[in-house]
Each structure stands twice: as C-alpha cells, then as structure tokens.
Image 1: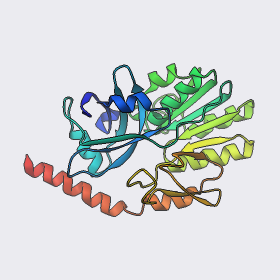
Image 2: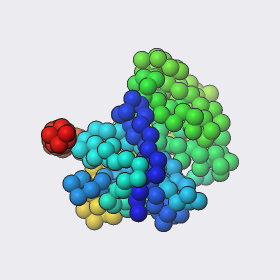
Image 3: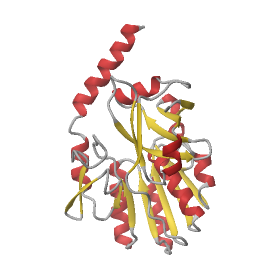
Image 4: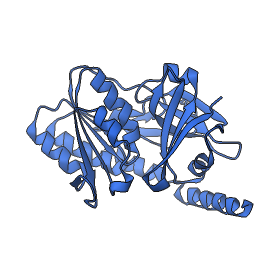
Amino acid sequence: MFTIVAREEMAAGTVILNEILAPSIAAKARPGQFLILKANEKGERIPLTMAETDPEKGTVTVIYMVVGKSTELFKRLKVGETYQDVIGPLGQPTHIEPGKNVICVGGGTGVAVLHPIARGMKQAGCNVTSIIGARNKDLIILEDKMRLASHELHVCTDDGSYGHAGFVTEVLKEKLKDGGVDQVVAIGPVPMMKFVSQMTREFGVPTMVSLNPIMIDGTGMCGGCRVTVGGEIKFGCVDGPEFDGHQVDFDELMLRLKAYAAEERCSHERCACEERGAQ
C-alpha cells in the first residue's frame, strides 16, 4: 500500500513528482483537496495538495519542493518503495461554477495545485486562461499539462529566461484591464497570492486562494492551521484549503509560517549530516 509507482525529478532536482498507489483515495479525491503523508517513522506528517488523481489506475500524484527534513526524506524514496502513511482526501474540494471566464494564476510549485483545478474548470465549460511563473525557465513545471487544461496559457519568468519577462501579476493586470473576468484563482507563494488579491480587489473580481498554513493532524483537532479570514478564525484543514483572497490576513499567515523556520533549518541540516555519515 502507498507504493511509489512513478517518480520524476523536476526543476533541476529541487522539485519531485511522486505517483503513489492509493486506490481508495484516488476514487474519492476531488480538485483542491489534499493529503497528509509521512515517509517513515523518523519523518513528520506534512500536507500536500494532489496534483493529479487517476481512479482507473488507483493512483494519486503529489509534487513538492525539497526544503526541509520531511521533503528530503520523501526525495530519498524510490519507485517500488512506500510511504508509511498517506491520509486523505482532506479539505473541501474546489467549488466550480460552469460557464465562467476564469483566470488561473500559479507560481512555483503552486502550479501543481492549480493544475487539477484549471482542468476541472475547463471540463465544466469554463473559459480558462492560465498564467504560470517561476524565477527562471528551469523552475517552470507542468507547462504542457497546464496548456492542455487551459484555453490560453501565459508563462512568465522573473529573469526573462523564458516567456514573459516579469511577474505573473503583470500579465494578470493586462487581462483584468480587458474586462470580462468572472473569477481569479491564485495559488503559489503567499506574497504572490497577497499581491494578486490586492490587484483583483481593485477590479472587483472575486478571487480564490489555496492556503498552506502549518498543519499537524489535518482534521481540525489541533488548531495549528488557523488562519484569519474576514476577521474570523478558520482552520485551513477543514474549512479550506481554499478561501476568499480578499478576506485573508496574509501578513498574519506569513508570520505564522516563519514561526519554526530556524528549527526546520536545523532539522534539515541534521538529516543531511546523518545521510552523509551513513554513506
């Protein structure tokens, strides 16, 4: 159970794709929902939104950036090996209204979360324009899949090495000026989602964001994933992960995400030292 059946290193090995055998989860999962995974007894439980599901094959796909101990342990798992735990589907699925003119904006590994949503909206009869971006060409992921999931695709790089030279918000602003946009979906780094939401508020366009707060149990029991939305406390795991971007307190979210940065860095360094020692 939870065997890795396919694995791909993306973005120069800093982003990893794992396709995992999980038939019961694949049969129930919907766009926007997430999993909680644990590599082994030495790992911690972390949430990852599903980039793809295949009920016929009984698999779910996650894409993650290697940034800490747990994702480092994930990276070491090879095809044929298993995750100790995979729990899901968790969270609320994306609310999709057919026939809307939608702009989907993704940054970095947020594109992996955005892909099933864009595809689901296109299948529901929405007109989907997607804008994806990364720091440089090597870090762009899922371009081909996003092209298939969209009627129109724009690719941006901060350094101008590919596509539009600049930020996704620059392309978004031009599209908003053209008018006729019913909804924007923004998923990526918190500062990106914040700036997208500020921009769409000026144009009066409803905006949905997918949040990634610190999460422990994923069932609403611990309260660790609390976020402030519209002045009220919400739990990312059971109320989300998607919320109205115009109502989210992004500054508070960014502070909470930094709460254990030093500890995470030390844990990752210890993990790397243990690996080198074992070799």
